[in-house]
Amino acid sequence: MASQSIGAQVAINIFLFLLVMGMASTVDIKIMRQQLRNYKAISIGLFCQFFLMPFFGYLVTIAFNLPVPVGVTLIIVVSSPGGSYSNWWCALFNADLGLSVSMTTASTILSLGFLPMNLFIYTYAAYNSKDSEVGGESVIKSINFGVIFISIAVVIGAIATGVFCSYKFDTPRWHKIAYIGGNFSGIALIIFSTVLSFKGGSDGSEPTPQETITATRPADYVAIALPCLLGLVVATILPTLLKLSKPERLTTAVECCYQNTGIATSAALSLFSGSDLQLAMRVPTIYGFVEAISIAVYLLIFWKLGWSKAPKEEKICTIIVKTYEVQDHNEDPEKDDEGEDEVGSNIENNDEELAAESTGSNVELSEQKASTDAS
Image (cartoon, rainbow, N blue to C red; front, top):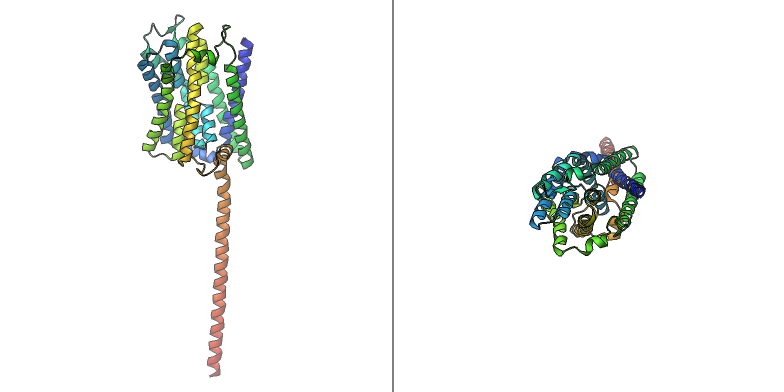
């Protein structure tokens, strides 16, 4: 069982690395540098990620009086940066991918400090120290941060590799290969994670989604879904008030509410057992479904409203398989060349007209002189 778990974790990290590297390689290095200096947009995204989302999780935990396994796991979910999948969603629906990769870089590095800090603050605030102990240990001490930090290191390494490849192989062919490869890796990661989550069950191993959802109360669904929905609303209104561009608003909303449920799953497995584990495993399972459906619907609606980089008149099958990050990069030089050719042709035409006028003037002067001499 341990060897299978290690093998599954290695496979997940490989798919994760290829996905993030592919998305980072798609971004134009010039746009990436520009967005890294976009302090206003990045600051808004980090504020929503590390302050609003954990606070929403805490409010929901208190308002719905969630038990320790559910409440603690929900706080872990809303405190974990989305990492790879947020880049994939932004690439798929043509939000600002450069800003998404920049935000992922910043949030992944900062999560090394903010993730344990938020867990400590909000689990302690939501439950007193006695109730928040698991197996005689505090929540913070019970979490296997080694697994979490490995995933964070994989994301950081993949971003660095992708940015280097984008700089070294800055060609349309490489950008398209990286984009396609990243999408395939993202799909493979989703399929592999879904299949893995359906393994195990009542024989004492990890509970399956069917088992975790069967006994879930309607109030639990609402409580787990609320932080995601609140995050989408607030992370759309706040960038709009601060006058970010429309694609940047979409990216900020996705980066805010799309959380890394894999971190919460790993933490739940190290924290709880038995019936408590079954309760805890509801949270990443339900939240994962809610965030995927709500973000897909959200991006589709706002694409039709003209907020994404893709034309709203285009077919959906076209915008999904086509990256407008690459198109903009490729087409600008062609437009510049066309403009230069047009200016050059205009100059040549003007020169010809001036030469013709000069010739005509010389002929008239010669005729006038000849007539004067004759008289």
